[in-house]
Image (cartoon, rainbow, N blue to C red; front, side):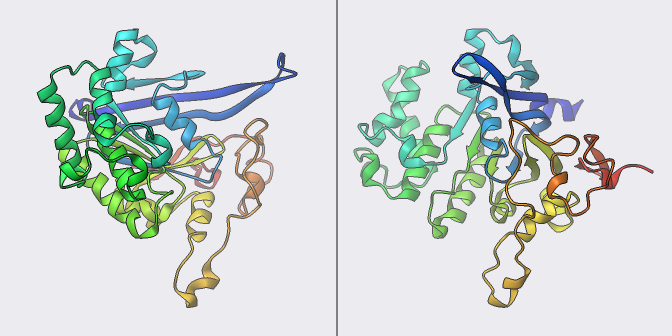
Amino acid sequence: MAEHNNRLMAARDLQMWFPVRRWGFIPAGAVRAVDGVSFELRRGEAVAVVGESGCGKSTLARTLLAIHTPTGGRITFEGRDMEQFTSREMRWYRRRVGYVQQDPYGALPPFMNVHRILREPLIVNGVRDRQEQEERIRDGLREVRLVPVEDFLDKFPHMLSGGQQQRLVIARAIILNPGLLIADEPVSMLDASVRVEILKLLRRIQDAHNLGVCYITHDLSTVRYFSHRIMVMYAGKLVEKAPVGGLLDDPCHPYTRALLRAIPDPEPENARTYRPVPGGEPPSLMNPPSGCRFHPRCEYAIAGLCEVEEPPHFVPRADHEVACWLFREE
C-alpha cells in the first residue's frame, strides 16, 4: 500500500502513432513512435529514458506532457486517469508538471526579460498577488544559482550564457511547485564544462522538493550522475528497465550492451574498445521489423524466433526487466 501511495505516474501499454497520408488524404500507415510502453515513476525518483535518435524518447516526453493525445493505453498521475480529465483537471495537471527543454535559447521568448519570463506562468495560472509573484521569482532565481538576483531580473535571454539560459529554463519549470519534472535532453546543447554542473543542480532541486524526474537523453555517460533507474528505448519500445548501477555495470539486452560499448573513452589506450552499434541505422518506425525490432542488428539473434515473435519482458534478476528471448525461461 505504501508503494502504491508513493507512485507518482504510471503508463500502461502507451501508444503514440502518427497517421501518414499520401497526397494529403490517402491513408498510408502510421509512424509508431511510442508502441506499447509501460513504466512507473515514484515520488522523488529520477528515471532516465535513453536510446538513439529517432527511438521515440522525445515523443514519449511530449505525450507525458499532454502535448500529444495517446493513440492507445493509459497514463495515471497521482492516482488519476488522464483520459478522464476534464479541462479544469488538465490545467491542474499542467501546473503539476514542469518541462525543461533541450534548447534553452529557443525555449525562452527573446522579447521578455528574466522577470517577465518567470512572472508569465504565475499570471497564467492564477497567482495574482504581486508580493507572492516577486517572492516566487526571487526564490526561483536563487534556487538555480542566478545570483545576485537583481543582476539578472532585467536581462534578456541573449545576454545570458548557455548555462545561465538553461538555469532560467529550470527556474521557470519549477516556479509553480510541480510534482514531476520532464527534462528532454537538458544538457545536450551545453558545453561539456557545464553539463555535470546543470545535472547536479537538477539533482539538488529534485532532492529539495521530492520531485519525480523523467530525464530524456541519448548520452549514457551522464545518467550515472543523475538517475536512479534507466529505461532503454529502441524503435518505440522499452527493451530494458533496471536500477542505474545494475544496468550500467551488468546490462542484459544486446542493444544496451552495444550502446555502452559505443560511449567514447577519452583515454587513447582505450580507443580500440569503442564499437558503434552494429547494423547501421535504427529501423523505420513506419514499417518496423516483425518480432524483436532489434533482431536485424543483433549478433545474438535466434533464427526462427527473434524475427517472428516479439519478446515479452523477462526478469533475469530482482528489479531488472529485459525484452529479449535470450533470457526466456527454460
